[in-house]
Length: 281
Length: 282
Image (cartoon, rainbow over all chains, first blue to last red; front, top):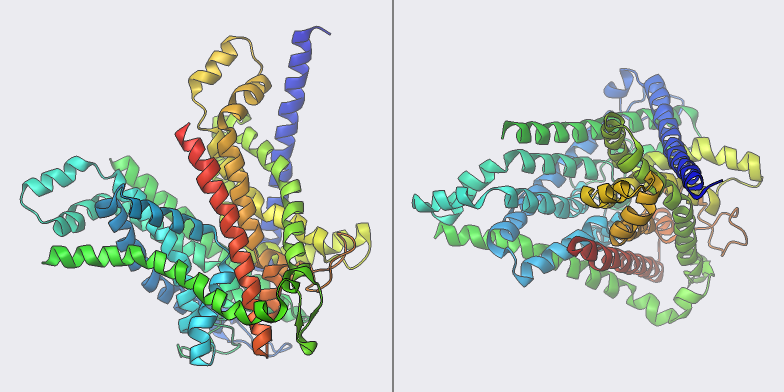
């Protein structure tokens, strides 16, 4: 075999290995998705949306409590995380720019984005649950809100920096004060990007389980009282899946399917908005 | 006037991040003082975890975290690099787009679902092949590997894609095969970025709770083999936080949380500030 032939053969082998690893990865991931869809769809029925949690063995059991609880928790977390994240991102991009403080904040926030979410849960347990004396929806929402801030901050910072400086200068030349320039020119220019960031942030915290385990805890019944433990899809899914009862496990799969569809939907929507925004320019 | 108020609002929000992070460290530290004072170094070097005797040694949890993450990296890194090479160099542009987006979407699937799948579908397979309970380090490592794979592949691909086309084209012009270009041009060029991406995924894996809580077993013993059930820091926290009944128990759990936070902070900081920054500068 000549040197060239040898290189060609090695090339073929290497490329084949790489393709095989891609197929292995795809195989596992489709296996998981397949299980999720099969189990999830077969467990879906209208009762899930009508009834709340029931002891195992009851026909009239559903996930209404967890669906509503999840929506409340995510809504509250969004109300905490989005304003803080957007304002902080605005500071970094419009005021802090390349200052040392701005870079420090960016770095710390970047690390927080990948920090273990269960630790945030422990922190919120110490500062909210312990003083209150009991689990509450507030605690869960605060934990999710804290996790959301760095995500929103990062995308806002990036997206505002993409707005051309000339637009700002043009607005300043018309005599607009800085806050006006930011609110009506910079934000408008970065609208699609910020919205995508918010959607991705919601998708990210929507799937969080660990920080809720000992903040909002769980409840098998319908509640809208923010001062009490609040059920969520993720914790309910965890509890039902680890229970020995078949019908609870079924509900767990239904919850997993609904949650995944919600999160994938948000991710796809975010991408579509960003793409449409880019195209228009 | 309004200008000043708006400025202060934004600055306060930005500073809030620093305040929260400092606050998290302070709170966790203060709450874990009792355990640290009681046990000293024994807290991390002993594996006896007996809440009824007020004895808390976290060695099993710390080792469990390290070993399961190591196993996951061992399995996921080669596959992730393979997928990244496939995505950036081999695949047809149409497949590239579709496959690339689906990898990114899979990275968004909540980890609790990977854990559920693992418990119901993967643990029985391990049980059939290796015997024993099925739950334990091996199952946790494999499920962790599958869970971080999409994220790892996506960021590694992004790192590889930073290689300028002109470098690759020059190598092809000299008669290099695709593999020559990958190993002699792309990997050396994007080395810092690739290593940074892999370490970043490692940082995520250490702190991952839900994918492994189902399959770890939560047994506080240093395992004799990777088939034994054991525990890890996040698994212990997830299982025992709501059960703790004494202040020393709580303090030990906060100590574990602090240990985990420091471990992942250091790993992520190394990835971001050493490797990924170097990659950006290059």
